[in-house]
Length: 501
Ligand SMILES: NC(=O)C1=CN([C@@H]2O[C@H](COP(=O)(O)OP(=O)(O)OC[C@H]3O[C@@H](n4cnc5c(N)ncnc54)[C@H](OP(=O)(O)O)[C@@H]3O)[C@@H](O)[C@H]2O)[C@@H](O)CC1
Ligand SMILES: [K+]
Image 1 (cartoon, protein in one colour):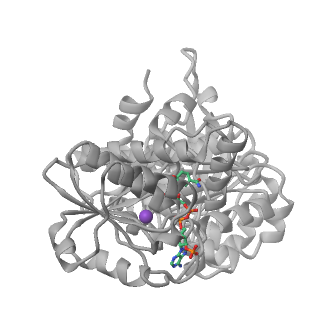
Image 2: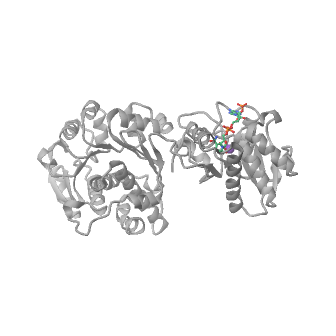
Image 3: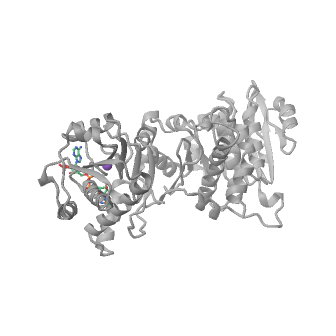
């Protein structure tokens, strides 16, 4: 499913009319009808609806919804919150249909506020610009104040559709029925909460690609389709030989979790390279993994035998490695000498910010997997800027350095060097724990070895990780006690449920 900016949504609508000959008022009828259908399914007939209608096409949708619900016998009070001269075009057409149907408009009084049980917010859609002007400033506050169930049409009124805007006042919806395609602000941290429970409603626009490069929200079916099948003749070579590099003397756990996640997610053979002192205990807990010692200074990795890179299908480095000086040279060597996909995470990302010129020179596939803070440090932006602009900041970094970016968060945004983006939303707050990232790194290492396309590999890896958490907390675990190591064990259920034929 495409994730659109406001201007891309308008482009879609315009092409539907200009190229496909669909009249605007028919598109609005279809939109309102689809939306009313969802409202009817969600709420019992004894609810009292208050429909607030604004002056643009969002208000036009509101007129159609109010009429259809009234046609079907629902108790609906409709209020046009702007003067008559503000209603034009397709919205005016539908206002006329509404009034010719014998339906009237009410004044918004204290009584109406108190009578309603569900408010349908069709005041402002994706056309909102700048700070709210009267009467919307007061109306938005009132909608948030009265104790009705708040249903926003397309987008909570006042909320920007795109990323980036910092200051706004908006309806805090309980439910949002999004028209045709999710907008960027559904996925940005400071805006997503305003949507409440969000559902995309297909209003029947012709299937057009309006995002270029493609920007897509992953559905579960896509994962199953895109997942590489293991041939019956699979051997460890065909499943991939991966190398994980990380771990300092005081931090053995990260590498162990990543290695375990790598083999559980299907790697043929995983080798873990770490400081020699960590090997006995790590090897004891992971008999399936091969271990090799690195050079070491002050308890951290200071050098790696580049022969160990030969014969590998992918390499992941940086987890639990520490931030001491010697690590930088190790990362520099890896950037220069790794001829297969190289994934850099955690402390590796810390070192990477001093090696951006080397990164730029690298020609083979490179993947970085930052969370917001790490992304901020890599790009020199503030964490606030990254949170508000995750799509464009990821895209710029991916293009500037020719890398794949996995920006981790409640909605993980995966970006290819050409700017294509996939949002993967599986997972829950149980994953917000030290070690989750290490598990993801292990899974992604395996995915990079098994998929033909890195973007697909990374999206599927994020899915496995997030879905494992979801399945576990739907069963024995809760978001409070879930551990990263549980997520590794939970992979079996994800494979069984979503991948296995
Ligand atoms: N086109 C499509 O692709 C499709 C669109 N569809 C629907 O149309 C919606 C978009 O409609 P839209 O473009 O008419 O804009 P919309 O959100 O109603 O707002 C415009 C109104 O808001 C006002 N206004 C703006 N800012 C303001 C502020 N700060 N403070 C106060 N007022 C402000 C502005 O007033 P003005 O600036 O003119 O005084 C104008 O009256 C979209 O969300 C979806 O629901 C679907 O049906 C089908 C596909
Ligand atoms: K709205």
